[in-house]
Length: 253
Picture 1: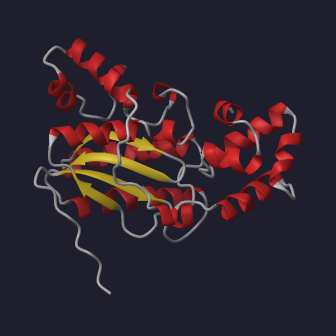
Picture 2: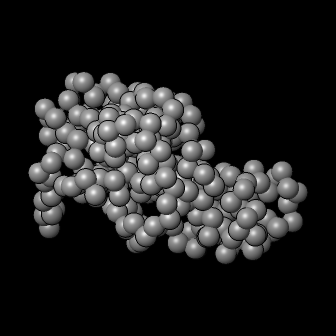
């Protein structure tokens, strides 16, 4: 059965999502995240693309990108190929790292571009990794409000207001707004089921029943909760439901 043709963007702007094969984590530590961002920067001039937003999560990546000289498929082959080559050398592994081909959706107007940008920046908040989006280290949010490193912030900020100071204030307020935005993401069938989550919790914590986590001392409990959220991408809601540990505790860990 042939694959469905990728929908082309008239504006050249795409929201892109890449996921680790078999839900595998693709960023084990900070060095991995730093390397991926360096790869993005390395090919930015070579391929002629612009980046408006990014967020690196445990087992997936979101990008908001505008293609330039090279088509999207070629750009992503360069980015993925370079990172996977480095990753496999570091961890002494072979084979694919990303699952299937990357997903993409065209972004054709300013309103949806802002929606996608907010959705990307709120990913860590939605996943329960942080309580404030500015606390997450591996998204482009800080580049808009602190120091630019990789992202073209002018395109978005000039869209919000001609005055840079006012534009940043509008940006901050908009990115913190509660919403029901629905954008490109991992389909529900690819999310970690409760059965799979129980298996992960038992293996990581070396316990026979997931509710045994309630008996751990605070430091041990919080260490495992942090690992289960960040490395294995279990959601706060799922951990609360399966372990019986209070949501506030899971969120804070």
